[in-house]
Length: 270
Image (cartoon, rainbow, N blue to C red; front, side, top):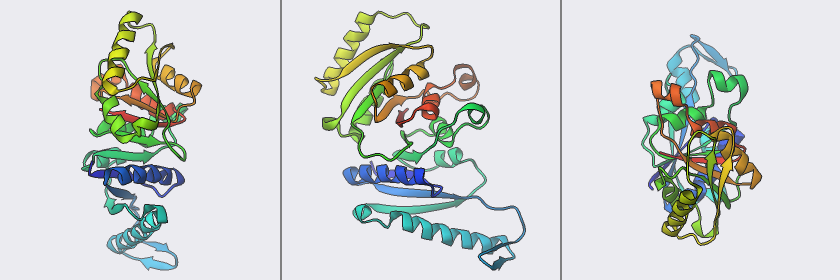
């Protein structure tokens, strides 16, 4: 892992994400790239702090310099000293998700407050759109994080590589792993077969102590979120098919729904 991308709007939740990214960067020797998107006004002139800017270029220079100074303030912490940072300040009309999809990164760590109700049905959350657009793993942080100890892996046994990839980022020796398969009544399955698959997967992962449950729920996303709450998880780990266009309209995305509704951090692999 060489590059961890952290989009920031300079909010508290962005700082929570940065804290997590820094800890991963320390372990992996990666560079943290802080990305700030400048929302540029459409007016022909503006006054900021009693200074008059009569051209957009002058105002853009002001915003760029201000952003650099504020990003520098974010990373000026004693606990960050051993980590290499780069700043990327972009003036673009593209959505954050489109911008992120065009960046080179091995991991994206971002803060989010999620989306519910009308917001979810209109624009959704930035994190939801990023998960859909990018091809690298995305770690969405909701609250301050001390450590990811109790980890819920949402599995359907169709894709298990995301579990192995996640364990490279998590402290495998210190986590309490919980595996959940959600039964929403839409698929026929043999529970004995699932338990056998889980045993084989645990052996491959090197887990002798773990929890596995077949959890009944009306929807897969609700089952994952509810189970994570029940066991007081620190993070949910899952993968997405990253459907777009018509397929996304028909099938939706369990991962995007979990990102929106979970109370804890969510790591999504592809």
